Image 1 (spheres, rainbow, N blue to C red):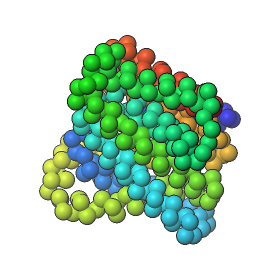
Image 2: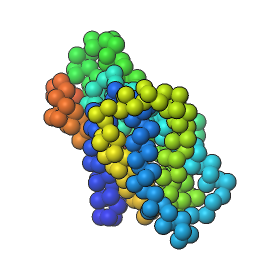
Image 3: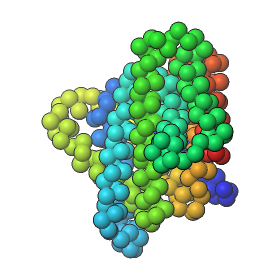
Length: 290
C-alpha cells in the first residue's frame, strides 16, 4: 500500500467514526435522519458530480446502472439498520460489531458459496472476530449474553455488518471493474436511497419534522462527512490498492468509534470492551492475510 493510499484509508477511518458519533446523537430520529442527511449529501456533492459528468468522467451503461441501484439499496438498508441499532444499544457495542462482522460474513460467504478453501489464518480470524464480539457485548460477564440489551446490540450490529459486506463487494466491482468514478458512484447511490425513502417521508411528513427537532445541524454534518469517508476508501481502491489490504486498515475505525462512545458519550465500558475491539481488529487483519 502506498503512503497516499494509507493516508486516505486512515483519514477515512477517523471521519467514519466521527460521523457515526453524530448519528448516534440523532438515533431517535431514525429514518427521518437518514433521509435528511442524504439530502444534505446530495446537495454538498452535486457541484463535484456535475463537473465530473460534464467532463465525461462517466459513461452510462446497463451494468453501471444495476450496480448503482443495487449499491443504493444496500446502503439504505445499512443506514436504517445502523440507526435502529443506535436506538437500542451503545455506540461502543453496535459500531465495532458492525465493522467487524462485515469482513467475517464476507469470508464465510466465500467459503460456503464460492467454494474457497479456508486457511489457518482465515479460520483464526473468524474465531477472533466472534470472540471480540462476545467480549464487547458482555464486557467479560458471559451471563449478560442472555440479556435482551446485549442481544439487541449484537443483532443490529451484525445486520449492519451484513449490509457492509454487500455494498463493499458491489461498490468495489463498480469502481475497479466498471470504472465508475467514486464520487459519481456514491452520489448516484445516495439519489437511489432518497428515492426509496421519499414515499415514507411524504407519508409521515409531520412526524419526520418532529423527529428532526434539534437534529438539523447533525444531519448537515453527517451529510458532509459520510460520503467523504467512503469516497476516500473508493479512491484508494481506484489507485489499485487491493480490497484485502484496504479493509483491515479501514477497520481501525472500530477502536476510534468505541473510544468515542466511552469518552464522549460516557457509555459504560470496562477493559473487556477495549480488549474485544483489539481482538476484532486482529481478526480482520488475519482474514485479510489469509
